[in-house]
Length: 250
Image (cartoon, rainbow, N blue to C red; front, side):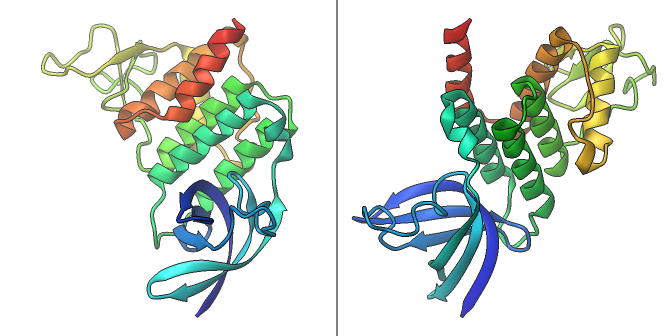
């Protein structure tokens, strides 16, 4: 049986002598694990569409419960990502997160669109990394079912809370705190809260249509990163590498 899908390569794993296993994020089939025969040979015609972060059309053949790539054609290779190691590491971080939150046999259209838009923003726009990263992290958390309650203080309802509990995803005032709670609270201000509300609830086509100052943008990026990692209860190697690159340039 043959299946044709459009998908983004989230991961490439060496398999046997010259084969590889790809993890694809597709719109209708969700996450797919597929085998590519001879991908690591020098003369393989599948190298471009089957590389990490490539978006393409794949014709798959199903045999004994495993899909094998029969044909593949590139749609977008995001070549701008490969010109800068920081750009590439940030894009790889997005792929690692998408691999964790996506599911097999579950539509992945919204997540796929988010990742593609963020990769395009890195490769082809002059948007700050902090803005692209914050948009991806918070919107991805929301798509995965971890939308924080940003309506107001979880205890008194105040619309001007002072902290975000990143473990529970709730807002709290400085004097409102469940004594039994041991969640991590991060300070939040009106600008940060406004930006987070926008990212969570705006139209997908307007994800980057907001502006904040450089200081707020840096705080926003730190906050969304902490929130996503707390909700997923894990870190990411590509994120650690990306941050090490930033540290070397400061």
